[in-house]
Image 1 (tube, chains in turn red, yellow):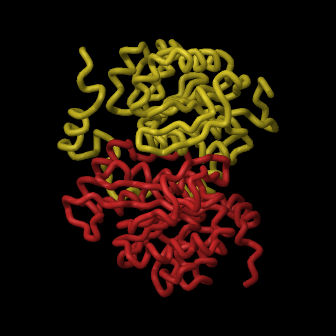
Image 2 (cartoon, chains in turn cyan, green):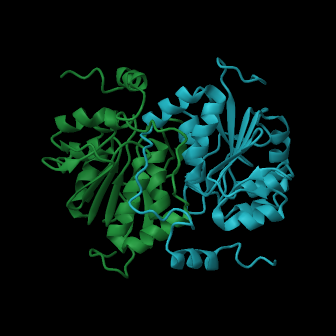
Length: 221
Length: 221
């Protein structure tokens, strides 16, 4: 395995799995990065399949214990993030890998797991729009942008933003032409039928409804 | 299970799995539809996990044999579509379900599997930009749009277009407010770092490169 990243090398990209991850947080960036020269692996506590918050069961490739040093770490989010904050083995794995990798990435509330290890303290980062205050509570500097870079750390907004993050990360890893080639291959020319993908754009009633039912809504101030 | 779709009902949405599917073709629309009132299930030949073209192993919920009548059928694409065209059990399952469902959907080259059953004959449909001619060979009327509706059939362009399709389908199933709520929840406010997601927009060199290496490139005229 390489410890440096040069234009000709293959980088090892590890995606962390935990119970209750959001499937698109994982598969969005995976679909992009796996089409680059990267080798992509899924890592979990055991080799058993891990169930997403919505019932998708995905089998990991190796365990935290067996995982070699990565070049890139990608941490998805999802409702399971809350429980994962107290999963010492998972947090230790993330902390260990973040110390050595070239790039650190998170999608959605995966940023909170990164923050839990201290690696985001004082760093600019983003997360799902419903979790921005929670991210600040864990010491990061929340930035309301879709993809936020701070040095070797790149964080994405909610769920679907992981695709945008991965294209940006691919460009950093292998250059913009490679990112564009992959964008064309997955025909990522988005055309949502509505313009309601951010709280600044969606009907206020929906924003309030999601705020009210959010797992972050009842946190003490 | 309901055979009609009313505003208060829960619809049963089935996603077909076959070896070599593209993971984002599946997970993109699943992430949207599973957040609606729909019940979503993954269906495959056996209960064993099914491996995507890029090594993602997902466990199905039931077999073709055990699957009840669906309200909505979603067929993903991927390089495995080619082999799947000759998988009699898969094709028979798709043909049987398409006869009864309220809505039929495909992503990417999943449209070719639909076409294989005859359900797209003479119908407007789309697929991955590299497979448009192949779609015509199977009797459909290819339309170069991201999401194409023809009656109860909705087809999407390549890979990532399944997210746009699913929002459109959710609006048809449960109304536009429900689609917008889900769009906001998954923060689908796309901002690709490049504008290369379609052959009309990407650098011509990349278009030619992907055309040359396409599995559809060597087909006899």
